[in-house]
Length: 156
Image 1 (cartoon, rainbow, N blue to C red):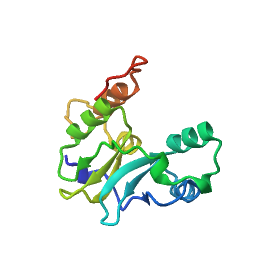
Image 2: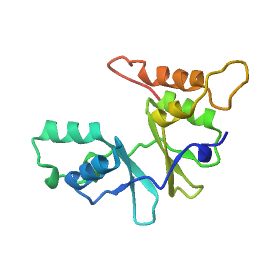
Image 3: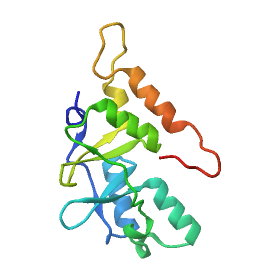
């Protein structure tokens, strides 16, 4: 099974120049917890999570309309490719401790979003029939994501 078979197509996204009030509205309207951040050529340059917004505003006593997405986003974003095997993407989620991966083309352009919650809803129990995406596969990745790192984390 490939990432393209289970990804969310045409996900919501934002740009680095938008402010956090605008990005928060996109999160609210889309019922999502993260937005890929793209540049003028649609290439993914970062990711902004609801947690990023809370931490940035809470630690700087700032108004959302005064802070740009670029100031709050994570620029070391883990991505996956549309043609990648789903099990490779699950391993990347566990290794990078993320529940969401922007899906990009070979040129780095945003194609979709892969979310652990959506994968769990699509997965099937491994009852001996060997589903392409089993609940056990997703739970294994979630366990890897949830394992706490020591205070000085050297996670990949």
